[in-house]
Image (cartoon, rainbow, N blue to C red; front, side):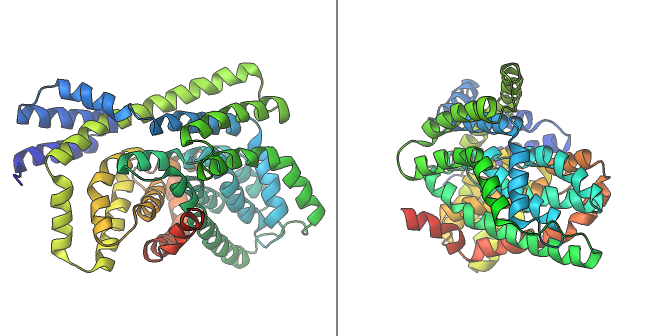
Length: 430
């Protein structure tokens, strides 16, 4: 194996410098790749070839559909229905509105698949509602952003599709199933932490539990939750491919939003589609430019060198697993989620496989790590969205989120060292 150290240095150092200079990630990836190509004397037509190759994937066709489905459902009056359902389930507890926030995020995550959409949509309703009932605004914001990570794990998540495509040969249906239990454990740990804080601060209880009200809210929310069934049952059962199920879910979401819940009119649909195009342009250009970067990483044997370097430090699989998590957490602090998945997967997945971590389990680990990074300064997108929605200074939000960081790290360790948490459902339905 011939190692071109200078080419590797040009690729990685220029990328880090451009990121530090606050270039958009897509430009940083593309420019560093072009510099590396020029140094190696490769034709620049390679750029166009690899960009086209990167987005010419049948599996990736599901990503635009899932994003469109999330926007349609999120703008069609679904949020209020899911909050009412969550309130019927857990609103009776001490700190009931915090519990409602967490459970609603679990439900809504299965529709939007986005932590940012979860925070913006549910936060705009839940944070003022919690403040009116006597909750501290920084606590309400912290609960909102922490629980939004559930939405990244609960299918359908377009980030799981991106990971499956980048990793190669991984079942999207298996990844969808793998996210349910980790998301439920994350929700449970956040609820325990919220309950302890609520007791200490004497936050109010909600109304008494009513089984009749629960049934009524389930019947109202059924149409929203059925979208998840279409995707998950269709993919896992082999009825549809991920792309086909996503396309059907878009049509279904449009019908529910316009004709059943009537949260949207036809003129609103075009506004939503414009928002989808804006988001998709960002996602697809990231995928395209990261394809060049990944091509160069493979050509320069960077994944093999990284694996040898990490395993050279220690052969203890526990320490290596902790190092992988640490790398992903640090990357999450400075980069957005999609580029981390696209760039880090080819490097770190071989190392994870070498110490016996299943690719599906590693996908859950990566997505949860990236989710925690979205809440972490200096580049935590969800942290900034939560601060803006809750109208609370970022410093106060970070301080209020500290207990939830600990709970999320605990969940991450459980997912890392107990494979059955991620693999039980995929193996059960395989």
